[in-house]
Image (cartoon, rainbow, N blue to C red; front, side):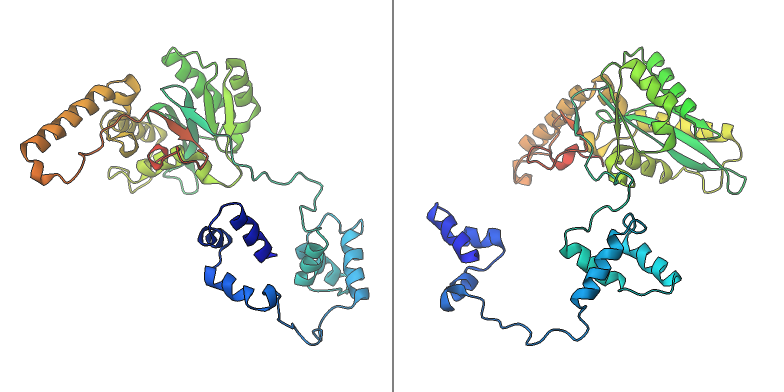
Length: 342
């Protein structure tokens, strides 16, 4: 069968080397196969069936149990222990899995809907206030086992923190109030804005979703337990908690936590040179000042190269303005790494 596919590909203009590479084979292997009775598999296989092989009757019993009303919604990992509790042994878990796989029945066996593995839709931002990402992280309090909760909303195009709050609890009401406050402070009509988050309770609570629907905001959610789907917020939290000024001791009060976060936001928006947006501050990019800054840097480098051309083996450093930023990008040729969160 492989040789027939190779012959068909070569007949239609493909080279043997390219065809072999696509199929994961060495061209010499294909040549050797052609010299072995036309490529027929000459391996004889085992001479006798394994001594521990299940009989046809035992195999039928496995399927009968798996299909029964009592066990049809359960995985073999749950079926086998339940049978053991009844003093019954039918087959091992691996035998259950193997037989169900061979019958094409190894799928989601519960009545509930299987967890979605589909990647969230890609969203592309070409300017500020088009796509936002938000999440909640813990801030340690002085009381052991209790935390303050930092709500943080970031514009993925400019990386600017557009809004934040520190609360004593996780709450969909607090999240909705924060979003309304941000829109009011920015005098922003959020119609069509994409707001991305993970699958936490405050993110998908009725109050938050009702607020988004009323304002015309497009909600976007990560897959369950997949942090990379919300990479911008996760990256921002990493930057926050690895700041040298981040306290090694817990916050004594919620007021102390709020004061520290306010200082961090001022530094991050106004002083931090972000690597993914050509080392300009989020505030400069959000306001459009970065275009002039990057052009000035390019001129400085061009002047330096004209002064000492022997020191430059190629182009100067890239100070280009990043035009597009993608949220959960499709892996295509035009979705470069510079557009991913860093």
